[in-house]
Length: 327
Image (cartoon, rainbow, N blue to C red; front, side, top):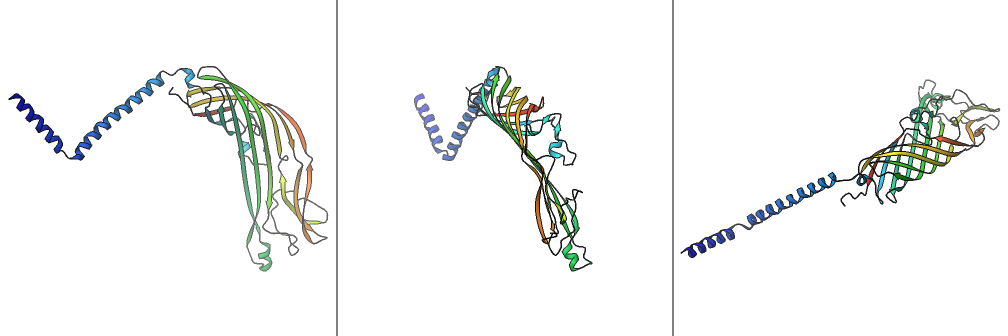
C-alpha cells in the first residue's frame, strides 16, 4: 500500500513538471543562473577589497613597463608671459625663466625598470592679439567727397614659444613618498613680433594714403613718402636655447594610479639669436612706385644661461597606466 502511494506521488509530480510551459522552465533556470552569477560578482568585489586592504607601500609604486601622463604647473612664474602685451612688458618673473619652464606643460613617462624611467616634457604657447582701427577709405573719398566709408588698419602681435625636455629619472625609496632625481637635454625658443596691414594701399594714384600710425614713430628714408611699418620685432630677435637640465624632487603616491609631486630644476643653456630687423614700405618719389625694404636693427648674438629654471614652483599631477595590482 505504501509502495503504491509513493509511486502515485512521484507520477503526479512528474506529470506536473512536464506540464509546465517551456518558457516557465527557462525563466526558473535563468533566475537560478542570475542569482549564482550575482553571488560570483559580489565575491570578486569582496576579494578585491580584501586585496587592496592588504597592499604594502611598494604596491603603490610604479613597476617596469608602467607608463604615465603628467600635467606640470609653475604657478609662481610671471603670468604676464602669457597675458601681457604692453610695450613695457618684462618677461622675467619670481618663478624663473618662462622660455625654459612654461606656466603649464605636459609630460609622458615610461618606466624601464622599477626605479629607472624616461620622460618627454613639452610646453608651448601661442598668443595673437589683433588690434584694428578705422581710417578713411581713400578710393571711396576720391569717387565721392561726401563719402564716410571706412577701411581697417590692423596691428597683429604674435607671442610664441615652446620648450622640449628629454630626460631620465631615477627613483629613490620604497615608501609611498619617493625621491626623484635626473636630468637630460632641453631645447626652447621664444618669439615676439608685430605685423601690420593697411586698408589703403600705396599706389601711383594714391601715393600718400590715409593710415593709422600704430607705433607713433614713422620710419624715415630719403626720397620716400608715406613710409610705414610692415613688420617689427619686439624687444629682441627670435631666441633659441639648447643645453642640459637637472632636477630633484619628491612624489607622493595617493594610489597606484595617481600621484602628486614637486621638483626643482637647474639648467645650463647656450642661447643664440638671429639678426634683428624691421620691415617697411613707402612710395619712391623718384620711380613713382611702392617699394619695401628692411632695416637691420641688431646683429645676431649668443650667450650662456645657468640657474634655476623654476625654483620651488614646479608641481605635477601624474596618472599611471598599465598597472597590475591584482597579483
